[in-house]
Amino acid sequence: MPRFLLTRISSGLVVLLLVCLFTYLVFFALSPDPAVQICGKNCTPELIDQIRANLGLDQPFWTQFFLFVVGIFAGRTYGEGVGAVDCAAPCLGYSFQSSQAVWDMIVQRLPVSATVAVGAAVLWLLAGLVGGLLSAVKEGTFLDRFTTGLTLTSMSIPNYVLALVLQYVLVVQLQWLPFPQAVAFADDPVQWFLNFVMPWIVLAIGYAAAYTRLTRANVLDVLRENYVRTAYAKGLPQPLIWRRHALRPALTPIVTIFGMDFAGLLGGALITETVFGINGVGKMAADSIARNDQPVIMGVTLLAGFLVVVGNIVVDVVYTAIDPRVRVNA
Image (tube, rainbow, N blue to C red; front, side, top):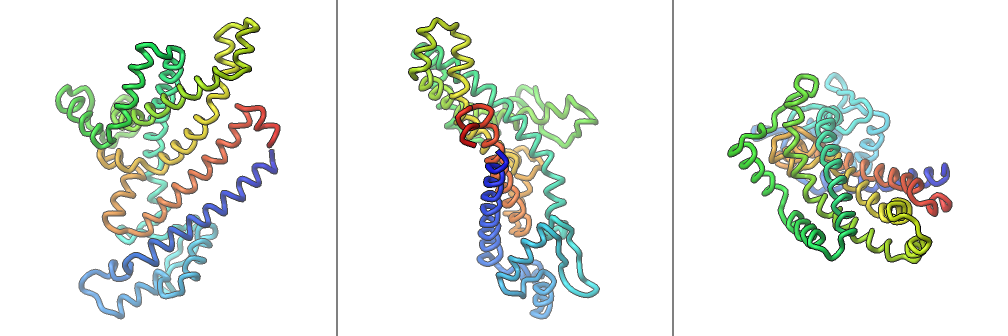
């Protein structure tokens, strides 16, 4: 297991380095000159050159990239002399619009995105597993056909449409829920919960539909395996066969997809956070794209890549607890 983890972590670091290189290349080598954007309309060539020097943009590309990577682990200093600014590790640069450290901006918004992701993940995982199991148990019945139709409908509705419909019905017409506002959990737990109900539902519905179909297909495939038929022939109780012989193998691909989906949501649910005005990482990324705030976009991209890599490693570890064959090979 230690050797397996070391190999996976090493490959993950290589992937992150490639993501970092690609992101840096796109946003700094192929996009408009950041110095011109920062300088504004009334500026001179001398001022533009000074801004480039302060940001380190006057150096060759590979030097800029090297300093950027080093800054993530050891920090770096922007500019020289009296105007020099120290950026502590992990340094992802400074926002062109607010002049804040990108890492500090991410840390401020990440708990909100994590709250949205965790709540939605709990909903879609419970709904997907229960719906898929019931549909598999009742294969060919009205419940199975109803669940299949419901999942297809849920997967066809875009998130932003569902968000607008829920706002109109639950907030405007029925007035059952308040429009999401910035309320801390310690100040008002009930209001905090009500603020996140709609974002959780909007994110969970599409994922729950996909997980329901996946769970149903996996369980039905496992139930047709010879070892399951042998268990029935031995006279084992059906609940024991489902729990020990059918459910665990069927969960393996679900764990894989869940790890990727959850890691991606931790990086920010861009559409949902924007529609509901939630100040998470996703909304920060959307605002930064609109303003072409390159360091913030790069920081969010690297965060999403890091979370996906960590999610892959966690999924591989969880495999060893679900499938003994993986444990032996590891």
